[in-house]
Length: 260
Image (tube, rainbow, N blue to C red; front, side, top):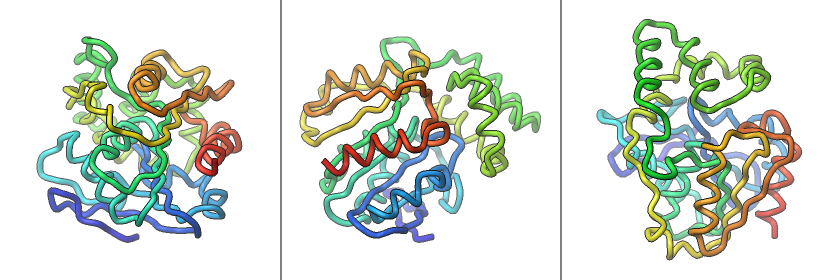
């Protein structure tokens, strides 16, 4: 693993592999750089893949005080170290981090956002009572129940997709890092402002799953209206984790866009 120093001094780790133009991957909640293992071999044949560990996960450090802004800076630091004309792919909360990082760098070529997560409208994305219940489970040492509840009640995954994640070797590491997902919910002040992104003039692909719940799909609709060069692509029959449930479809979407 290589590292780069983020704006607050935290060391952010990433794995570099493959050959070709640089492609940075930003995983979602509870995951680390191994989230992309199912699609990595194919991506490595076309790109130099730079798969990062977000702060507090995997080999990356963690700051003394968590804030969403630090996560945006972390992605920007990795993109800045990746070279020129970088493509950036983000999933879920990692897609929000990628979106915000795009405002902080000048070497991006194309951007892929798979169901970025942020509140649409004035209401919070999730009720505070839900966050409190998940925190209570973690503090009681019942991390696996907290993780399962996070996927069911926050992400909205059906039991079949939760079972697929549970069968993956990364499940134990997800249990260990579940608190990092809950702190994302706790730091819930983020609001998307379209006027901030008026100057983001690069092609953007917004991926959504046909079967994903409305709170996961709605932000992409907002982004498509706000960004100068963005389009939505709906993955038929899929939800929030197509890289696990339909890796060939997921690869087809992003490689087709990035190679255009």
